[in-house]
Image (tube, rainbow over all chains, first blue to last red; front, side, top):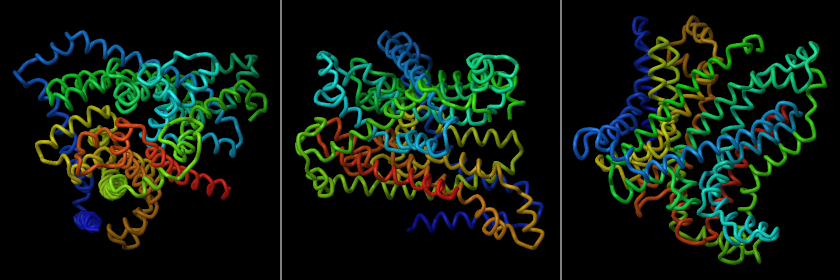
Length: 299
Length: 262
């Protein structure tokens, strides 16, 4: 394949560049990192900056797009709904995922492999396949509504509702909560619990006062990841939700897909970006604080 | 480890079983649906047939989409593993502060919400005439997948002892030789994992692909998306089942071989 020869050529080219007398070593790092940085800059940073820039200059320079976006009741309602769905999804995945990840640290290797497989299979499998699964489940003839009818609930609808979107998003995003939780929990030294018991703490007290605080970095990491991913989620809300109850992703898509309004879409995207970055900064601070007190001794 | 704190309680076990069912049940439903005899998503199906499998393997549009996804994914994996591995090696050699900035640039596609990345890429690719052609898909998918390679190779380099490089160099090996004979073989699992990650990211990517697609070129997820929005067509259950089968194999095989080695 031409591409393979090309990339092999690039590798050897760059390595030959590096294969020089000593004085060049300091430049080595730059040469190695340059191709990737240039690639990402051209194909990602430039597009992103250009989208943001367009929101400030089109159709007239200024904050017109932002005044329009932030002053529009519908847009604000959609933003509010997106936040509410993201919050619910984060909370439910945390409630489902925390005990699951905790159990993973207690069981035998074989059971842990099975539990890990159950997390990794949806994690690795196609988002479209998972979303389709929910469409089939929520279909009027599908298994969920059929089961609900047996119980006597005839009026429930899930396809095209916010509840349906939330349920599907929980399952689709759950692995992203379980994995950071598990990775934090598997690093916690369980002897600390024994130490707490030997000092007279009950099982519950030992868990709440010793284990739970140590697991907080995982909780923060998972929750922030989930919240950010939920905010920008597009596929599942688009296919399972309805245009009447759309989320911010659908709003951006409509602006671009139907109206080719890149400036408007850019303004909404910038708002979403600013929120995302703020959340990341806050969580980074919180995580540093959470991991400070005793974790140093725990490792 | 004391037994007192290590025995999971009954309630915890039940909870984990329920969560396990939530994780896996939706996927399990897709398999019988792909064998349905009728054009419906009724579960359990009224009858069984392989009609929809014949439909998939006989449909040029589905097969073309599958092929597009596979070869684009492979090209993306090659580009990303070369660029990403070099970048990860570079990060190790740069002063900490500069490395942090470079890393920030390289990881940006991972942090930015998918729909924002997709619209940004689309807006510029329209101008560059990269929409509706394979080049556009490759570039967009590669830029979205490269963070995964940087992260995985970086992780495998974290445990790498650079004294090995020095030892090889002191024995007279040139830089290329050191890289090819010492460094690369040792970080190969990380590079391979990164390449796999890149392939799957590309194979699975649908948001940017939805914008870049044209009736002339579509990837598999786009074809699935269009099929789901248009009509009730169990062929998508077939596609999902095939993807699941491959995914299960990829996830299960390493787990099984690892547990056997123990």
